[in-house]
Image 1 (cartoon, rainbow, N blue to C red):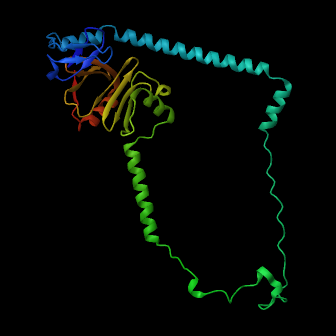
Image 2 (spheres, one colour; image 1 turned 90 degrees about the horizontal axis):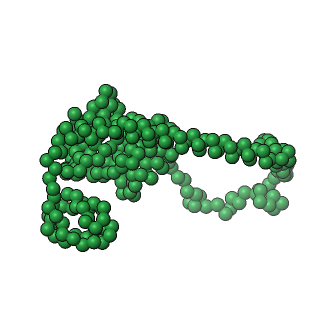
Image 3 (cartoon, one colour; image 1 turned 180 degrees about the vertical axis):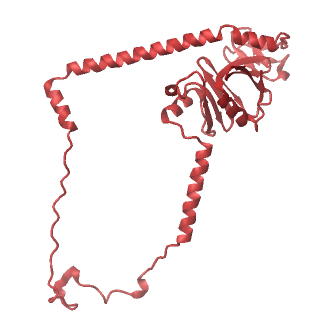
Length: 288
C-alpha cells in the first residue's frame, strides 16, 4: 500500500499491517502514524480508458519532436567542429597526415646461413663435431616419455563446450554493446541477474534500440518510455499488466494495488512474445 508523508511529497510503500503504527519517511526523516488507506471507488475500466485518452498522444509527439531537434543540433555542432578543425590545418599538417596513412612495406630480416658440415668427415667419436655430435651414451631409454592423446575425451570436451555456449546464447540474447549500455543505464541490472529478453517499444527507431521498451531479467520486469520508468518482480502476485488494443498495437499499464503506472506501447507480435514470457510468472495480464 502507498503511504503519503504529511511533511513532504514522498510516497512510501509498506504492507497493510503498518496502519496505525509509527513510520519514518525515507526522504525527510519525519515520523508519523500511518493512516488508513483511502479506497478509490471510481477506479474502474472507464477511469482507465479516460486516463489513456487524456493527452497521451500529444505528449508523446512533443517528446519525439524535442528528441529529434536535440539530435539535429548535435549533428550540426559536430559538422561545424569538423569544418573548423579542417580550416586550422596547415599544408604541413596535411602532408604529415597523408604520410601516416601510407602503408609501409614489411621487410623480413636476413636469415643467417647454417654452417655446413661434410658428411664424409662425420664420426661418432669425433670431438670436433661439438654440439652436433649425438650424445648416445648419455641417453636412457627408460627416461623417454611417450604421451598419447585420448581423441574420444577431446571430442567429448569440445561437444560439451559447444553445448554450454549454445545454452548461454539462448538465455542471454546477443545484443549490441551500445544497446546493452543503454539498458544498464536505466534498468540497473544487478550482478546476480542477467538479461533474458529485450522487447523494444513500438515508437522508437532501430537506432534508438535500448532507450525504451521492456527488459526481462531472471528476477524482474523492467520498463521505460520517456519519463515513465519502473520495475516489478516476476513473483509479485499483486502486479497486473492491463493492455488496451489500438489497431495493430497495445498500450500497456501496470496496476499494483490502487496505483497505476504507464508502461510502453508494443506491436502485436511483441505483445504475444511478452505474454508467452510472463506465462510461467505470477504477473497477471488483462487485455481490453
